[in-house]
Image (cartoon, rainbow, N blue to C red):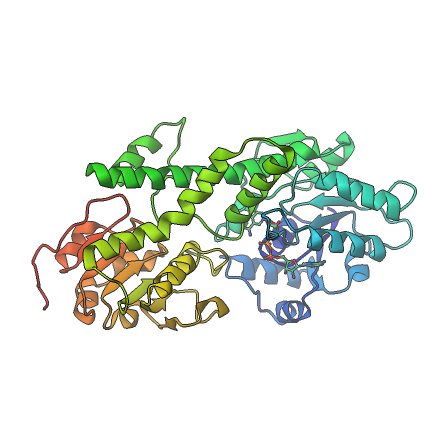
Length: 441
Ligand code: NAD
């Protein structure tokens, strides 16, 4: 079993630390946000990730897992240092490496004597970053610097623990075979294909993966527009498409578009890399453009149906970028809020995981979906939380002023909506009027 220091206690850092402890290792996290460290020490895990809290507490009790703000303490005895800090986008779309570089400086400054742990880059970083870190450490830590290995992370928020412990593949990008073997060995008997490659390939693979997922979503969203124009239901098309194993059904659901902390920034960074290297990138740019348009297309559809939108009262169901997490970063629902507000609509929102957020100024946050629907002209389901599927839609209709429900994730059964007296609007599906017109009016 190894001693591991994990740098950065965000989604990836916390999940990696807890899972590495579960695999039997001794893990110390180092995090610069002192409030976060204090609250984790007091038993409050700051992210809403299923099963993370009990796993964290269990291994903390066993003395296998701890957290600190002190690099010297965290690095003491560490054989591996997992870098899990954020790589947000710069204004030009490139990845901001300032957190990675600051962490590298702190590692170089915090190592005792001749300690030389292997640095494992889990953060998503542009091609060449591991090379850059190697050069940095060889200048700072003579004579040999540190070994840097890329090990990109593919976990999905909301499924982080499962994805870490049962990954589809483990990618280890290293320049020395011994270092690759040592890092691969940390994952014990996890039965996943192991891809050992050089660090540049590992770095590009991570971006390629997210770019491909975004492409699938934008593809089906564009096809949704075409389906509507042709009077076809895109959900039937995507079901049939997805059964082809060459295509696969994941990420093939039409909706409000992709978001979150990874896809938008990673696609932007890949576009930037293509620009920088002079390689054509029209496909990736189109993928971004289709995504940017999704909330606007939805509003066009609403104004076609209802006329001018100013003064419209909208109940928005779901704010997080996807269900089962509390992450609002780059959420399509928030982009929709901004488009609605630019049309002078009044927005009342409900999300099972969100009580307040700075990004939601001007939005009334409600404690349940029914309250948000009171007096609404339109309800829009923006994030497909399970609880929206089993609501009493007759009750919803009775609370509303209007009768339109927009299912912007194609998550609901249109017939249960129309039976409740609501007009159903999906994405890439025919609009369906209520079965019994004015049933509750
Ligand atoms: P995050 O913003 O949730 O967490 C990063 C943490 O690092 C924060 O707590 C921050 O305070 C801390 N930090 C920043 N600088 C530090 C420093 N110098 N020393 C110590 N701590 C520092 O980020 P995240 O979502 O966990 O993502 C981390 C990286 O993993 C990113 O590159 C991201 O693209 C990648 N990634 C994320 C996911 C995901 O689902 N969130 C999945 C795969 C890969």
